[in-house]
Image: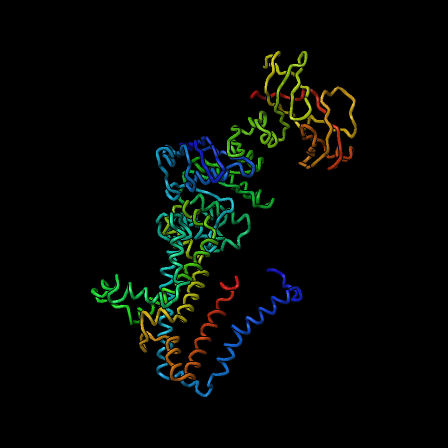
Amino acid sequence: MSLDVDVVVDRGSFRLSARLRAPAGETVALLGPNGSGKSTLVATLAGLLRPARGSVSLDGVVLDDAEGNRHVHARDRRVGIVFQDLLLFGHLSTLENVAFPLRARGLAAPAARQEAAAILSRLGAGHLAAVRPARLSGGQAQLVALARALVGGPRLLLLDEPLAALDVQARERVRALVRETLSGFEGPRILITHDPSEAMNLADRLILMEGGRITQVGTPGDIATAPRTEYAADLVGLNLFVGRLVPAGEGVGVLETSGSPLVVAWPRELHPEVEHKVMAVLRPSDVALFPARPEGSARNVLRGTITAITRQHDRSRVRVASRPPLVAEVTPASVSRLGLAEGRTVWASFKALEVRVVGTR
Amino acid sequence: MTPPRNRSDAPVAILVVAALGIAVLVVAPLAGLLARVPWSGIGRLAEPEARAALIVSLEVSSGAALLAVVVGFPIAWVLARTTFVGRSVLRALVLLPLVLPPVVGGVALLTAFGRRGIVGRFLASAGITLPFTTAGAVLAAAFVSTPLVILAIESGLRSTDSRLEDAAATMGASRRYVIRRITIPLLRPQLLAAAVLAWARALGEFGATITFAGNLRGRTQTLPLAVFETLQSDPDGAVVLSVVLMILSLGVLIALRDRFLSR
């Protein structure tokens, strides 16, 4: 029991190449910026787009096989989908919206309505049965869409940005319900999102997509310790550097980045006398900020303008447009003590030891 | 809603031409008609000839509107929701009656459905006659009004969100079920507007009707035909009938104003 995908999908000039496996009983989050190909993948799994190459199979049943010219129509796939814009039917009541998939598959109206009512009350939305979608709040509409996706026993569950349109309070409530729904669903379940905290919160495994490709697959822990792209590093809040690592004396090397070279501790697992193309990460909390050029033992000192300061709980993330750009994490107290503000020029420093090489390319 | 413009913004030339156009095309004919109405002779409307024409007109227009929507919706759906080679040629063909002189349409209908027409001869052997019957008048009126229905519904289909139809398909709905439970309900205002528009166009139809269905009182003589015939012998009677037609047409336009015309 699993979903197996290995496809190339063309949509105008955009091309998606994706290979992934989602076992039953596991929640996989597709995470990527806008235009990364998430919705193209959703449309392909739903049967609304035909892959140019490759195949899709679910529980061993081939849904798409471009080479074998096989394509199971969307209506015969039994995929339960919560669409990004929900796409509730505005001319039908909540109850009729949820009963729609059952009636479309030939169940008589009274039986379909009964089942729809049951699933609505299970989600705590029984009192909304007679209401038209236009009169529902954001959170209520989301519940109705979820009920409609679950009704009729789908084999695959696809949730496309199920929390994106909600305000903070509704989001907390719906998130709990989505989590419950996901863990209660036996087949493969796929969550599409661009919100990393949502993905890490709800999914067992993350699939990162960028520019129509899958760039990394792993547990939230895997990605947090060893991000493979700038986007991945940014997601987990790390600085990522990619470049040539050149030996520079006993136990140290120079990492040639897009900007200034960085002095880094030579990783023990790499051969000490040759160059390597590597990726290295730096924790934002290891970056210190100074209003003037600092004295001290730190080997790396970069200068740049602050472009953004965002507050996250008990710490502030400061983006510095140095070369290479950096993110530093400091306490809100130091933000005010150092007089940090957007547009100010600061000095950022970190020790060679704190740059951690996470892989070679 | 765009904010109302200050009138002084409008260029003088535009205002002058607009006023002139309204005077020549709207006010003068309307005033001419109303000035000539023999108010004492308004009772003529009760005469059997006028009443028969009014009844035939209402029957023919309603029948034609119904036929135009029943035939026009599937054609519009095909044009809006499918892609195939020659679609733009098909669109041009089905819209042809819009620009064709109605008399030519009537001649074409005769050559097709006349007693010796390429289809008509088979209909005749099955005992069905269309020329010079009320059904023939309905066909002639539907011929000229179906293109309007197609235009209105196709633009309606293109402006409704086809993602809703896709979503319905992922829920197991067949295309037919999607059309019945999603497309048509969402399109109801446009369908209504299309029907009213077709009805109004059919009401004014003259050329195709007189050519294909003739001018038989009580069967194919609609109000416009009655106006034309009455004008030869009784100009006052023609004016009265014309005013009736005008009021009917104006009523339809006012009923439509928000739904279709103001867009």
